[in-house]
Image (tube, rainbow, N blue to C red; front, top):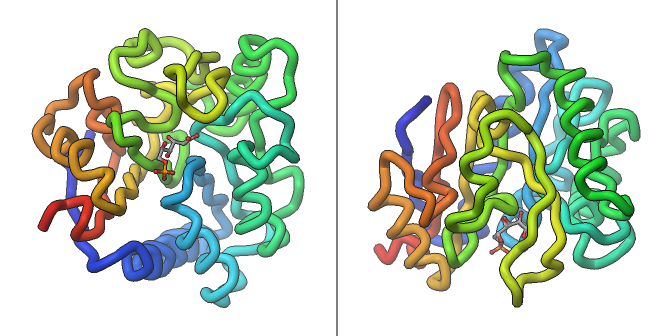
Length: 243
Ligand code: 6PG
């Protein structure tokens, strides 16, 4: 477990540039030792500039090749070609531009007819790569919703107290984009070396306030329950921090 660290930025662009540079250094540290780097990606709009910069403006051979593996912290149960697909967003911004081999792009099958079976398939895949109790991802790159959710772990959801399964089918609150989803759970997310939470814009002010007011974690703000093995960092701009 690690205590939350805050990194403040003027705006999302400067946050994303700093994040991309730090991520490249972390990837390079692993791949220079011919070790894989496993990243769990989120959906939403906040990570888009960081992914774009990572793929287009940070020329580094370590990013491509056979050592970078992409996973998803959650997925909407839609086909991978739909606008709402978290996989589609990352494919367009990151995995296709970097030419990451298909066998290293571990998407959740949003088109699956049986979300529970798909969640179990994905868990088996993760366990095959990470083993039972060791480190999971090198980085869980997560966002935070206006209600404090992260991945598809929503406030007071029963998924928040799951201790055995690493992935679950969930129903997002009515009104959210695509209610039927699969989410990773805290047992696997909190076994990441690093957890980064990205927050930008005034609309996230209340959620960020709640995150900072609950250093021990609270189910009313699921993002406050995230904690990486080595670091947990809130990357936020001034508007989200109400600085
Ligand atoms: C999703 C995301 C979700 C996202 C937050 C923040 O599938 O919707 O994984 O957890 O990170 O909703 O979204 P924005 O970055 O668009 O505000």
